[in-house]
Length: 392
Length: 86
Image (cartoon, each protein chain N blue to C red):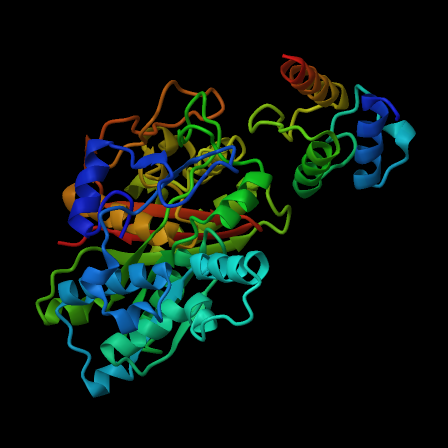
């Protein structure tokens, strides 16, 4: 589920055209905002997916998670029978939780002085709602929880699930991320951090003015490679390594040391040499601070090979989905490996001397990709990087 | 009411936890050891104090000096009084 399309194929098709889904916010009145653009999921009719009773119980971010989980589980071809259901984990990342529910409740309470709130207020807004609803939808009785590390939530969730599957703590995992935080309250909060672009998201480009928020969800089924191959499943890619680090430095300013440590950790864990990587799905928020810092970190990890990397930020098209960002970007990374095409960095104007890598400006590029990494770096200095290999 | 410069210097000094005398026009925020979080807080307090909006990208945390910040605020205040008079 993403502003670029509500299925993996629709998302990827849009990604390759370099079309940006960023535009004026349509879902609420933006007259109190200075920066009024975002990337919203469109063409999604919740009533087409959920009955009235279900809808009363789930916030938009959980709706996104469930639609994405349905697509993933169908694509995997797995039936969660009882003995498998208790050996499957569900780990979903989210940054903010049910912000639309929270906003609506606070409006009722403070503006309209309501004396009571709907009983589903808390179950709708709690951060673990997507994980809980996924377990109920598929009858999964194994471990399930939520990971919240702001913009790194998805990568932390997927990486943790990956560790559980490969260590045998569970047989399968359903993992990913979901976010739907495009509310006036959230946007005002982001505005105060002074990182929001009034126009669009131009990662690594001259003239970039900040980030643009997005929303959505992406969910994956993680399975040991041999198990998947032996049952004849369509294996999309091999999740090969996971690297994490903390900057221990500053809440808002990123550190290239922390970013480099997480990238290096992911490559070492995957047993992938830096020169085997040809595509990097960058965190690439489009803020003045992130992009040069991330570029320096990439150069530090990859050395001279950095000049041969294709580095792109698909946030230029689907916006920054916060807790869902890593999961949505992992879809782009997996499809890049599968189709041997690097998606572009859209809205790119001119190179910025402080960002000196090849950012695949504006046009997708067919190229050999055997290994790739996907970066997520959160406010608070929490970094999580996934390394992937192509499968045959 | 104190002038714009002293009000801004007061806000910065208070937020940075330094004596007012150390906040000079040529001081950069880095000289004053102001973190990113203190920076956004200072921008917020200045906006509240003068009822203005400091646009994104106009003021960068890494390079701004007190003088540049002051110039930006005075420019915005001049624009505001011009449009109020118009």
